[in-house]
Image (cartoon, rainbow, N blue to C red; front, side, top):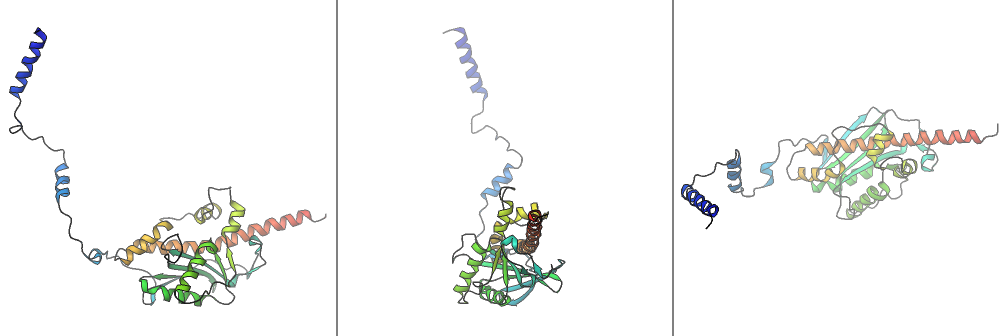
Length: 289
């Protein structure tokens, strides 16, 4: 055996003699906080209990209960009404009577549509007594849907002109389905409908990243929302409230919807003014000197 190999074996025997056995070896100290984590992981989860026991005390929803499971929130925004007649050429129409316009938007349980999706909030705005009146209907219990639909259909006059953003493809058909399921007919079917998505696309498609209402609001109207709850989170906020959770995010949904219907009024006037100015300027240019 070589000297080097003999020396290595000797060092190995010495190390084995000096090392404590597993039974006598001291435990390695745990890193700070690890013991607490282990105790937490070992703790058994509590037995399921009714959700209401964990409900937040923040259950305040603004407005007044006007029927079981239905609240009405009403506000007046300092938005001076336009002249009685608005140039409608931006939507390839004649003049629009400002007194007939109803801006509306829904908050729903999903984007799929169909009979499984329902609107839990309807926001509507119109010019009334020198201001923009915003009325919002909010279901606070599943049983309130029929009452919400009934109130909304009574807001529709024979001469009402609906104004929305993508409402022709989404909001109006969804509400029509809910009206039919509640055996209330289709009160929106025969109403004129100005869907601002289409003239907005004709003007701004390709100019900005998309034509979502929030983008147009920021880019064209210079409106920046603060602490706005994304529309995609609205269903969870409502369902959480129904199950006994906090009303904080539900109030944020109300604020989001309020801002949406007010934006519709601003956007309609914005498109009307720009289109009228451009068409009138073009007419002046082609006129003979």
